[in-house]
Length: 221
Length: 96
Image (cartoon, rainbow over all chains, first blue to last red; front, side, top):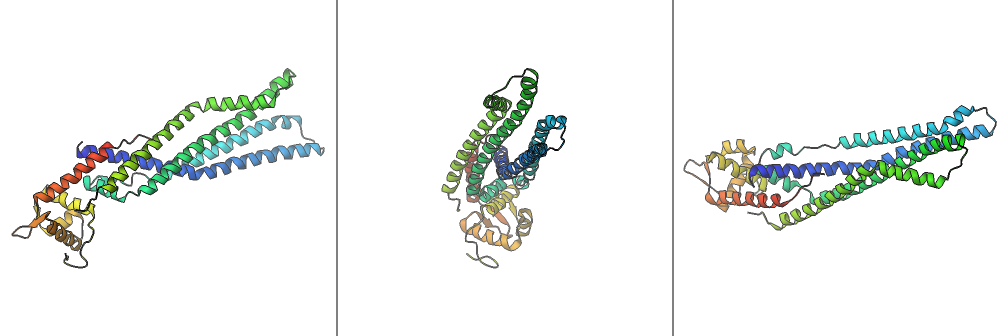
């Protein structure tokens, strides 16, 4: 291994840490994401309850508005999800990266400086947070897709089976179908997440080994 | 060990030592002012490090009082680089 290889390797090391920082940010931003989704659900429920209460109290609400209500629900939920995803991405992009580049340009002394300045405990904790955030975000994404597809299927089923064919449908099976649909839509994402969490785990192991070796070697001249 | 001013170095910064040795390896020998500029260290701080390094046998001063890297200094630096190359080389950083 040459000094050039060492610099490449160190750049990989620092890039991995930058990425971990981004994932950690994802874990923190998750609370905001949940709040945005919950707000859109509250808005959706308020709209539905409001329209139904007005309808019950004899206000003249046209059947068109009542019929379009589920579509409004889907729009509100979709806007909520879209806003949430954009918010999370923006927050992740605020993480400063490549701050180590100038130090690394100094060569081996720069590598030494970066290694000495590495707060290992902090990195281990960040990797754990990153894993949590990464997994939670995946779960939340599936749940959101599930909700949206359940609403969408309810609207489609309502129009086709009930209005046209005059069939009733089981609400349980509707939830089940929409859940499977959400899983199918997220299959690739799920696989990626699973692999990514595995990679974070092995990164944690590699760092732990390196940190132990680095500490064990007493560099005092 | 005493520096030219202030307290002597009790625990030298490995990064500073590496910078000084690397510069000396590249230039063979240097006067203190030029070395201070090359390494980006303040003159006072450099003197403290040079005192410490001279005591350890990593450098010596020639008749013109220029700083010269000794064989031991060069070997110590090479060993350090070798260690880093060996251990950092073993770590597999998966793209995440």
